[in-house]
Image (tube, rainbow, N blue to C red; front, side, top):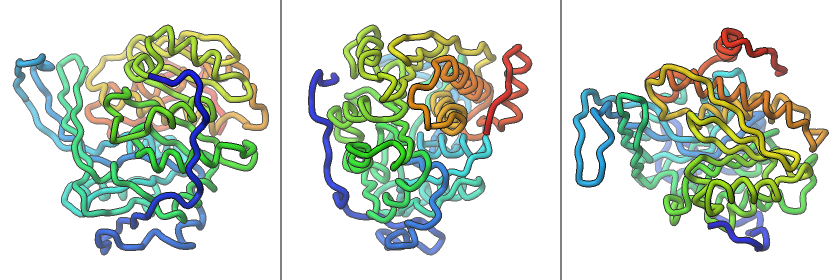
Length: 371
């Protein structure tokens, strides 16, 4: 549960060790991403998150405790929150790179090859000797799913200081709560005491409940720092109540924390829509009604759409953005997520900008947007 009062944690710029970039000739723990080369020409958006492999099972039902299910189909697909958000932004035409870590194994080479087929900058994907992060995804006929994740590769991410310096020269940095705490704290350090004009816009996604993040991802005290410092704070319908002490408590706390000088928050509730918290008020936004095939990547697709439309599409010179503009951006992001739910697997269903515009136009929503 979130602490009521605490100092925003800091760690110092040189904390942590280093990982190497993954390339076709890379060896575990090589130094290909270290030094000045990693600090040159950062992409406009840097995503810090897992590049994973999803082992996808189309099951007869989601099993209950001591229950079972039958898998009618078994497939392997690209996954990982970081990779999904990065590919989503690439599909929308954005310049984006991924800071991640995979294992020196078949899963790692597969994850890297999938990303290499996109426009995502993969130069800062490290390789280590831990097993690649992978997820077993059970998908029921109605599109609902359950996910179990294994593999230590992303959990052991510890980028070279030059990689993080390069990332922090991007216009936008996105990271998920599955990011190891030592890395999340180093990015948070940059937010503390730095003027917004002198740093990237930071988007933080509280993507899992505290119990799931323990020993794996961002610790509660660091989440607290992002809740008070990130330019945009996003939390899921399971994660937010678990952290803040309930659905109503989440809205109440974020209304008090996310003042205009700090920035807005968005809570996602799946098919039940989204709650936009800005200017001290909470506004509900409906999700789009679609024929659901697979909801696995809906949250990641939503994040890509929101970063595209609100963070990149709205000037940062006015910290108190009109709530209406954010609501419009959330509708755009909801369209990205809705389209994604109509396809199997996450990354193949991530839409282009033209597809989103057409989807919105068909539903009588003005699809005009600024790039």
